[in-house]
Length: 214
Image (cartoon, rainbow, N blue to C red; front, side):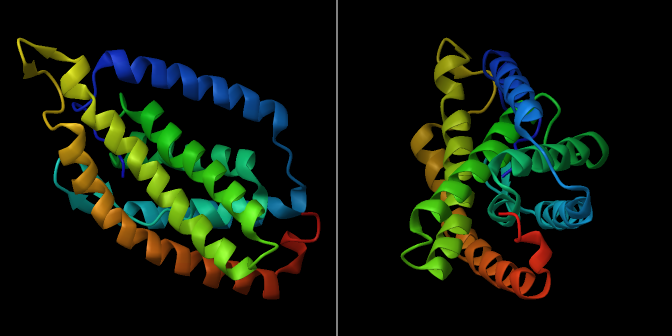
């Protein structure tokens, strides 16, 4: 799902950096974590890192992978999940070349922000009806809303950054990009949902301290 360098115009990635910086500022005012849960947060962030590093390249310059973001959001809340996932994306981009430097702001908005908040609120709305289904859909929706945002950002590049009809950056239109990205991510989302259910249930059974203050 990460976008590499070279596909996004400055008119897109500069505002994305600004928006990400603003969200980081808000998060700095909201985020609190008990010292006894730091090790759990670090462990689940590391798991998210591993999930996102195992990426399947897709046509048109992005990739499909699990994220682990939903699990972070359901256990620690959306803002802390956003911060943790953002740090994972920064490390991946700066050290491992997974995702671009210019596109880091976009990747943070798509994966860390949209992934965290959509997962959390899907779970919150549905958990009283069927908690297992709520957890599964949190994983599925989180992955797919992030992916559709990526598809939109890529797909508008030929419209906003071209000269005499020739795209300067990403060349494919929204329809082509959406199909190429969303079809595999709908399937990836099924795996993400199932993994989120399994890990959430396991952690809730064996590490109750993580859930005591929720």
